[in-house]
Image 1 (cartoon, rainbow, N blue to C red):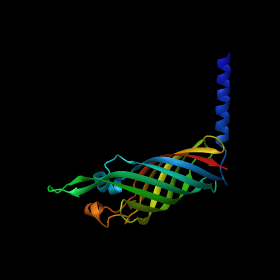
Image 2: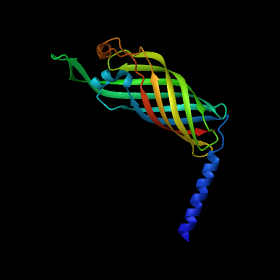
Image 3: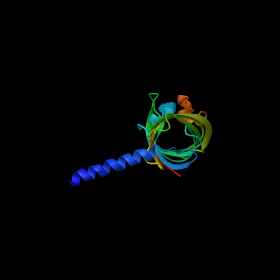
Image 4: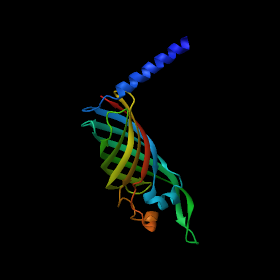
Length: 205
């Protein structure tokens, strides 16, 4: 008897969450945290030679505003860091680790517009376009920066009326940020953009 009652309450709470979650966030501000994996197809040779990882963790904050049922504007800050080893040319024409550690910090501020499809549903697919500013700094080198663009596609989940989760994929391009010297110049790579797969949690007021 107790088990059946608990199951009924669980179903009731789930139904209430789905009903509340279907409410529109139109005209509301949202704040959120997000995190994921940053992959580097745009400067992969330089990255693999120095950092030799499958990717880096990216963490960020977001402020969003739901202009209409379908249109959302968001400003975000993301931070990415990596650690590796400096390399030096060897006699065979390749590179080998020097034993000296090196790290990078990549900070990105972006502005994106997201178009929500089927916005009245609990699960809402969307796509987004935006612009961003990237600053890249490597150990003992001056910070370099540049402006680029980004493309997003994702799924917004209205957990409750106020709490939204998201799953998102993003491609970005920030050209002419690196490539002035060292390995990036050798490989002819200048773009610190890449692919990010992320999860996020947002609270709408």
